Length: 111
Length: 114
Image (tube, rainbow over all chains, first blue to last red; front, side, top):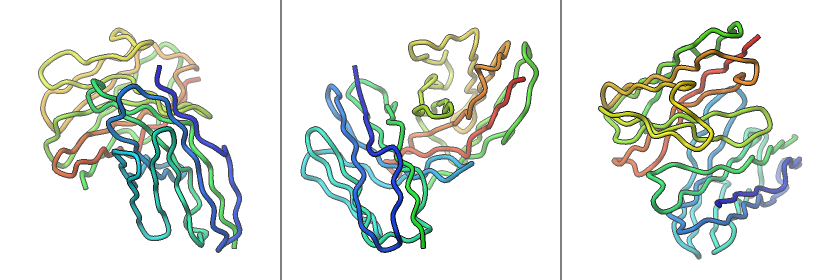
């Protein structure tokens, strides 16, 4: 059975204090690992898709990396507007594009 | 990106009643999905809405409780039937947009059942 575990559950950073969020996964036939950002009261906003171990993608202060067992979302010099819940999800083969999500990491960046 | 709208954005309903949630996409998409997000829990897939045929439900979800329609490539509805307080949740419509090679989510419908 697919498993997606995100850690930590919650993270508080000072503005400018870089850190990483972890997503560990167990899936049969990975067909993509997805990162989303979710603000309170809104739907998830797509950030990245990674397909193979060693792949990296960047967007502003965010960088996502992938190994065969986990993915990291690195946040460099975060700002208060980066505060949100970050969700990780996997898609496995023969799943018809359905996603299996972790519970998310709630990030708070204080000035 | 694909723009998804949902109606209603929120509702408060009485036990035993039903609510239909609408999902509209601004472009034709192949795949549409319905997810549920309960407090403190992961987003969970309810079903894949298939155009022109019956929806495909995930384990633990049944058609009698969550009937789904998808009359065309831009619209779908999810009905939450015979509601109980345990159905209080956020319900999210999602689409796979092949042209963008991305999966998008709507803003969600926040349902409270009293």
